[in-house]
Image (cartoon, rainbow, N blue to C red; front, side, top):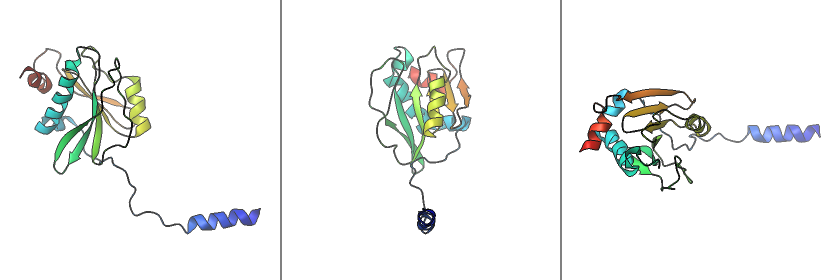
Length: 161
């Protein structure tokens, strides 16, 4: 029995380690300056529009994907569930973060948002018409943008167009 364990250990030690782990998530600095990018703002606004700007309680979600030097949104198929959305399948290559909407009255990241960011190991943006919250892979949430007065945020201005 001892020889079998040594044989198994030796065969594992001779396996080559792949030169690159196949992981579709791209590291990118996620901060307030990112919200100044027109491509990111348009992606967020598109998602908000598809969720009726958080007025109906139906969330929408997608992956924010870095494609060359610009961002695009890969939408998740809608489930039409109340305050929920889900993804089945592979995460797209170049994904920087998952993005989903919340109803306008629920601007904070939920415990489920925090748990999922940790479980999947991907940052997550929670967006409403008046706020953007970033949930990092360790489950911490940070407010990036908030408009309590109803008019100053870039997302709110886009929605008025």
